[in-house]
Length: 418
Image 1: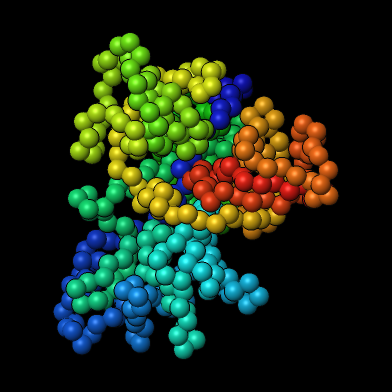
Image 2 (image 1 turned 30 degrees about the vertical axis):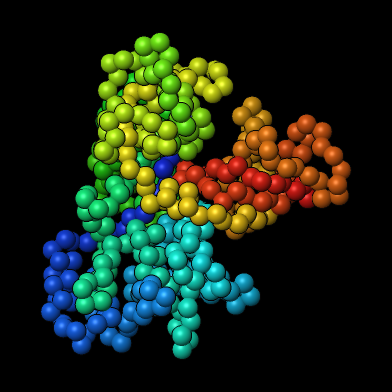
């Protein structure tokens, strides 16, 4: 491996983040059939991985199916905790972390902004019930049969005719140690993992022919994962692949023979995509031409201009259906999220700071023109004097967080505390 390893900023690190261990399809189908054969006198039962939970049932309120949260998630191996002071329930199973209040229709998965599921939790006879849609948010397969029986498995089956395609969740390099021949990655399913690549032949499908921070990987893990934190694994294979960028078309216009597409990338903001007349756009929808409002999957070109917004010739452009997450973000007018955080590092060139929020962990803040910045005592600001490591802040976050690790937010207000 070369000593002068370059560092690049990842264009996209999709967190999605929503999968668990594999559950055999035939087991799921058998369980569904078994549930159907129980008859109408067995309605509202719940099966988890093929096992009937005796005495545990679905309920229905306001036309929403609700499940008993503790019984189901403990059966799935999660730990449940309740804070009586804040009325917050937390559900944990590494790397998953779910929180919600018993008083609000707002459910947080990992570090995403709180999501409404159409119903706040309901407490009946000491049992807390939540919408079945919480399973969808976490990525756990579930189906309610014609007999109102809930069947829960581990593998998410996608009906391509009715379900939006799940986004690709790449594995991103976060650190490289040449001396130890290891690469640290952030895996959307497994969290942080250290890969021992001493005797591994790296396959490159990109223009880059050496490992760099920020690259996306496809990894076939070895059979043994250590119990350390983070775990260490010797993979069977490692492939460097293109990172997929997601976003929406803001405008489309002709520039001579070329087409200029103003694309709002979830990670880096606005980018102009320059498409030659013979550029082939892939359509997975009924559309036959590019237009404002479409959702795109883009492999950005390596070269970008220094203009604002930057311009590039993409490697590929695919028009896709909007994900369920995108729809929620567009249709939901959420309140501002508040938090207390400490500055961890400062990037003045890109006008960003990395903060550690007391509840949500690391978050990158974009210091855009509209963010309101104040001292607690009312003193005015001089340039970036307050941007130092260890500075305490009160932050009003905007409701939308990117799916990257760490997530990126455009804050509404920053209050300097000390």
